[in-house]
Image 1: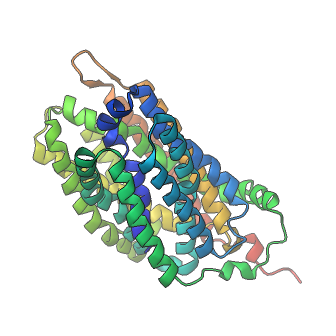
Image 2: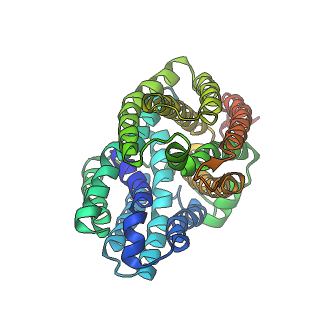
Length: 397
C-alpha cells in the first residue's frame, strides 16, 4: 500500500517536467515561469515538513497520513482543473504543502511497523515507486497530455490516488503504538527538542547529503545524453523504460541484501560503485546506446542500494515517540538540500554554443566528494544506532 502511495507522490513530481513542452505554449508562459511552477512544490514541501513536525507524533500515524494524502490529492485535482497560470501555481503550492509530509509519514509507519532487520527489504520495495513512475506513469502521462491536454495527467494521478487512499482506509490497521509514551510537550516544544537533538542531527546531515547527488546530476542528465553522447531525443524513453524496469526488479533484491549483509556495508558498497560509475559516466563521449543503458541501470542500482540501506539505517535513529517529527524535519532538510544542490549544479555546468554540456566532469567530482562525506556520516549513524537512546536507558534508580 505504501509503495503504491509513494508511486503517486513521485509521479506527480516527475510528470511535470516532461509536460513543459506542452504546458508552456498552452499557458503562454516563459521557461522561467515554468521553472517557478516546479520549484514552488519543493519550497512549500520543505516549509510544511517543519510546520507539521511538532504534530506528527501526537496522532495515529494512519490518520495523519490520510489527512495529508487527502490534501495532496486535492492539490493534484486543482492542478488538473487549473484554467490559468496563477491557478496552477497556487495548486502546486497546495500539492507541495501536503505532499511534502506524506513521504515522511509513510517512512515513520515503516519504522513503527517493521523491525530494523526487515526495513531494508521494505525500503527497497517502496523504492520501486521511482522505477514504476518511469515505466508506467511518465509515458502514460505524456500520452494523455498529448491527446487530451496537459490537465489529463493530473486528473489521472488524482483518480489513481483516490483508489489508493480508499484501500488504505479499508485495509491499513491503526499505527498508534507511539502514543503509549504520552507527549507532555506542546507541538512547538516537541519540534524544538527533536530539531536540536545532537543525536538526530547526525541523521539529518547524512540524509541531506544523500539528496545532493541526484539533484545535481539528474536535471542535466538528459541534456548530457542528447548533446554530449548524441543519442536521439526520441530514444530517451527507451533508456528510461529499461532502466525503470530493472530498478523495479533490483529494488527489493538490494533491500534484502542490506538486511542480510548489513545496512552500512550495503551502503558502502553501493557508494563505492556509484563513485566508479559517476567518474566513468561523466567522462564519456559519443557512447553507443547500449552502453548508456547499461550505465543507467548500474547507476540506478547504486542509487537504490544507497537510499534503501540509508533509509532503513536512519529510521533507527529517533525514539519511537519522536519518529514523526524526525521524519518530517528530515524530509524538509532533504528538499532544501536538493534545491541548493540543483542551484549549485547550475553554477558549475553550462551549455556551450554547440549545445554540449560543459564542465559535466567537474559536477561528477563534486558528487563523488559528497558521496565520500556521506559514507563518513553514515558510519556515524551506524555507530549511533548501535547505542541505546538516552530516553530509553534505565535510570540509575
